[in-house]
Image 1 (cartoon, rainbow over the protein chains, first blue to last red):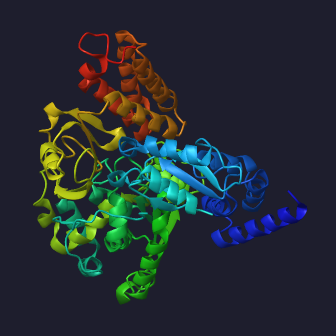
Image 2: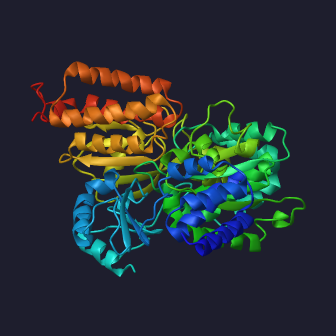
Image 3: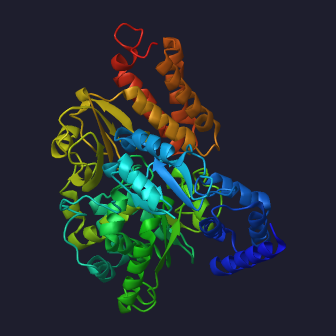
Length: 157
Length: 405
């Protein structure tokens, strides 16, 4: 990471701390904001958050690694999360799985070479009456079939 | 391409899915005052709709009685139980009920701050909910001097989760709000005494809060007309799986599973999972049971399986879920769930003995007793009930098992 990038990130985290408060209870909100923009929370970002909130970096790391929507390693620009829970599984999750893997040439848990998409599984999205469902970033898509799923993926930049 | 498609049929129900004019419940609440609010709630017999069924009036009274200048009302919108999606519908179509429930709660217990803990998966609702809160502020239903009542201040903020099922447990939810890992605390002390940031905190399910304005408007006795003597009122059931009309239905407590199956047009059901992954799986012979706290209890999740479904595969899906979602804090849950999943895989491969299965059922019972929170206490339910109720299918009548390779 270039020094200039580090400085920019530090400044950004300072602003976030200002916005959400210099308090432990603001931690999750700050981390979510970093995750939203950078698609991961780097070691450096974790250290900066720790420094500004005056807590140990390990504390920050333990929170980042607990929540499945936060991560320490870079991911793609878009995160696609396919629901793997029972009702979606019953109504064709596996077919969607196969189709998107074939289309993108990657498996679940991986990112496309051009960093466009990361494929993940997720647990119940609360769309059980309209499965199979998937989240693309924070948007939800329901009643998928392989073709519509692929069309949605092809539209993401 | 379909986004945010919600069930299209018109929603009808005696309580939540009935006519409501925004602000009515709140006005009535301010009119009758704290004591009468608690009285009506107590008379209504309203119990927590998240699944645990703790009497709401008692919870509110306990925190109203605790002496503290700072108190909180938290709306638990971390709806993560597989097969549950009623809170999504409530927040999307009836946000006024949920927020007014919170304001009334704040007024009753003496809290000035309400927090909605919205699961990360529902982030797409955030913007519209924020807009709705703003419109409530503009109408003086939220913020300072609510409805012109001097000194009645209450505001609501929304905080997002980040994909952790266990945060639906109220103490884990509070830990998460405080910026920690979502690991449940020991109880007692209960949140009503020592909650968010150490202050008295009421944590209520979305549906519980949404019921409050209706109860105050029409009275506790009216609410009690519906349901059974120990499960009063109506309940939102999230029905999914093998049926023609999946969706959210408001039905009185005490409705039998057979009746639900008829309503949603499920003709070939062989099993019904009541209460989501953490609930129990009932075979046809038990479809006469009624949905109520005292019989087949549920936070609303009803998943239907037809004759074609492989129940072992269903069980595997549930156990994988728990292995992933266990917070890992206590041993019975962390290790127990992986052992149960391993057992399902062994049955799948035909590598089991009956004494092994017996031991694992015992392990399940140990988990129910020894786990720290509801997750580990309820995760063996599916394992035990599916292996018990569908043993012929899973092990075969000859004892070798249909899953014997």
